[in-house]
Image 1 (cartoon, rainbow, N blue to C red):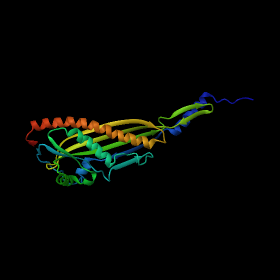
Image 2: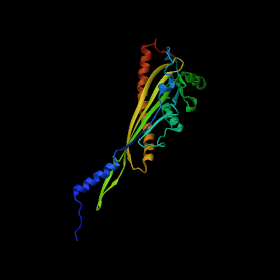
Image 3: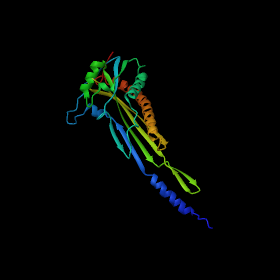
Length: 257
């Protein structure tokens, strides 16, 4: 009795066909808010002309996340589903507190107030900031916005196990999470942007289909943490440049002690 033997070339071809079935399925999800949409919701309205800011030291500073087009603008593709995004109100307050803890050490800052999301209205613009200035007693505000995109390439990290009866394929996912956290600092009364500083991060990970959502949530959280640390470094640099600029251009920025 003869044993049937599968040739290596046929076995390899079979493996490639199976791999093709598992590969090529990709997904993308994006969560984004934009400061420009909050400050200038009406594109036909005239642009606000800022006046010369009068900065009274020590400053009273507020920090707030701008709202999106409907909470946060969300785009899904490739079979992605909600539930992987972790920027809750509690997380926002924690990130703002991290910024406040770092900049509270400066003597020219009197206090830093964390503004909850409920205080900001969608498309509220400078009228909303005037309300915050009056109710929260702040002069300068740092508006935080974000853009986080998560990619997954299902099957890109597939593992091939050779057995006695052929190839056994275990599909996996290669995940990348790109995060931008942007801070734009405004003097509320004058409508003048003082400076801005972005922070970015890229998180790479892999997972199985079973724990994909869990891994994406962890990457989302880690992405915001790293972007916040990068943003704080850049805020320090931009703050130093602004102080130098204010000294050199007293007609553009008036500083009162």
